[in-house]
Length: 257
Image 1 (cartoon, rainbow, N blue to C red):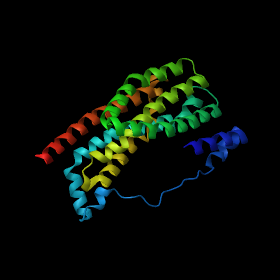
Image 2: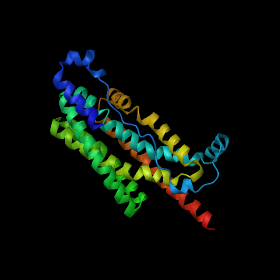
Image 3: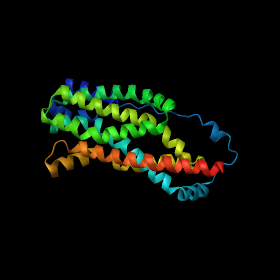
Image 4: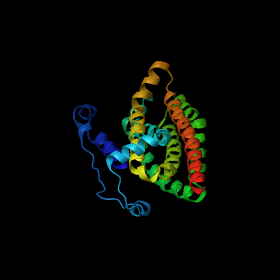
């Protein structure tokens, strides 16, 4: 994301607005894909490898966990698309700042994410996933709209930067714990499939964040409306956290009995 935003800054410096509109936006970004991932010890210890029909049956039996997992991820996907994909559009079209200002902020957001994701993941290793998830969903519910409202009251590069860095802190801190939490609450037999389904379903909603934010601004006339959308996503994350950890505790008690 940092690399892509830097490419955007460079291209906007290099090309005139007309050239960017005509062909500059097509400049491809580079992606590095991991070819292999190490399996968990828990998975390697399993002797039986389930068939597709067994996986489908297990997913059907655990649909509630997958659905709640989707709620957990919605907070992540909405926040991510809001502070990355939507920032250049929001900064330029809504706040009337320069394209370079918005892209520079996007670079800073990427660096901020790079810091907070591992740091708060490590914190969740020490204090537990649930406290971190609860704290940052509640903080997002309470602050996302007021912060965006503060930004649109007097738009400036400095305010956009501060607003986006705060939202990045909320996103990175939540996501640092969420990714691991989602794997931990999924039953072993459907861990990969359940995780993938929950994440994919949530992305189909979160991925529309730029369009939804634009629509909300249009119908309400409130430039801070995207903050409400992020707050709603955080409510989903809060409810999902409470449901999943209550269900996980119940399963552990059942196994112990």
